[in-house]
Image (cartoon, rainbow, N blue to C red; front, side, top):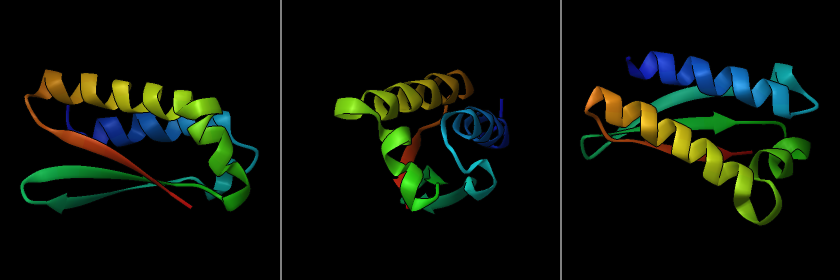
Length: 81
């Protein structure tokens, strides 16, 4: 599994969670040898992606972490407006 597959998975899941699926973008950055997957959503949808007490964001991060671990890499999720 590559980082591209993680990005595709995150894009699909996020589009199902939000009211503006056309505004969902998933990018990638590198910082100090670590892949950072950047999830950007419409400002009205940020709360939906984060969830009550951050539970949805924690679940998304757990999925990204599990997939990255299978690849033997470190990948972090960053959520932006």
